[in-house]
Image (tube, rainbow, N blue to C red):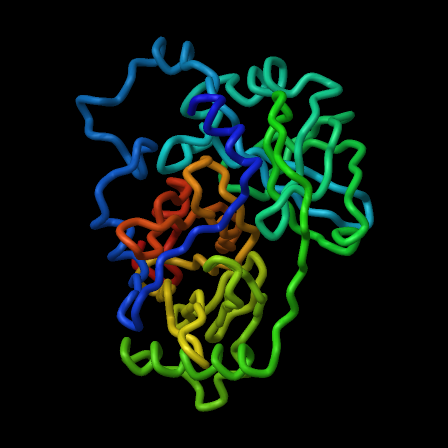
Amino acid sequence: MPREALRRLSALVIVMGASGCDNVEWGGAELRLQPPPPAQIGAPAEDTVPSVEERREAALPAGPVLYMGRRDSTGLTLVPVGEILDDSIAPFPSDQAIPGYRARFVRELLPQGTEFVLFAEGVRVGTFTATDIGTDESFCVPRPAVKGVATWIPEAMEHERFLAVPRNGETAAWGPFQDPGTDFDQRQASLTLAAEVIAQVGADWPVDILSTRWDLQAVRLDQGEPGFAVSYLLRDRMRMETPPPTAASLFLLGGREGAGYRADYVWYRQVAQEGKGAPTFWEHVDWDGDGETEVLLEVLGEESRWVAALDRRAGRWTRVFEDPCGASAPLVGAPG
């Protein structure tokens, strides 16, 4: 991606088109039927598999890399998501696919003192300087884990999840930062819309849907209009563990429509058919500089986690990227 596109992060203007109630994307089918993005998802055709020598010499990212960050009692840790492309994200390769890739990535792209710009709720909120590098083994593809020194604007001092890009002379504006909390209408709409989706897919869900709601976050994706992201789990928990084959997950984005809310994006996944993959909203920002915000999701599997990304295409939220390991999550209780 050209550096000019990254510089456009300074605008950080969220431009969203209005969408109707039928703007719903359905789980795995949507992922597998969409036109392929520049970052290939899944196994390549046999005649396109690079030789061992080609894999060894595979180039490091030429453009900016997107990072996701979490703050806990030990401080802030960043891990790379992948190279930012024009309309997708390039997967972070495993050392099995490209021997020595992770070490080379750290050596050439993450020297001590590397500086980052931190984003939350679509705007710049802080800076980060790398001091120590480890490895995060919780991802299905182990990634560098960057520790360091962070600074935030006062309004973001309690925020826990961030996105980041290396600081390369861009002038992204600070704030104004607003960390929205859910209100009564959003909490009610999250239940109503979930019930409608569950009825449409014919899922076996308990009458008390509230008992299956694991994560609800207020977001402002549509030109600053209030919205929400919510995750539901049936016979499962929001952690890396093996659920029963009858478990399922439901994620949806709710957008403002008149005095109420509509379902803008839906991801329904049955464990028996696709394996465990429970998504939650991570953060959003216009990371590719196209004037519209993108959304990063964290997805929890049985033994590891991975990431997925949403973007607007033809007025609809679409899953434009998912780590290849997520598309092949093991099936629970499947034969063999």
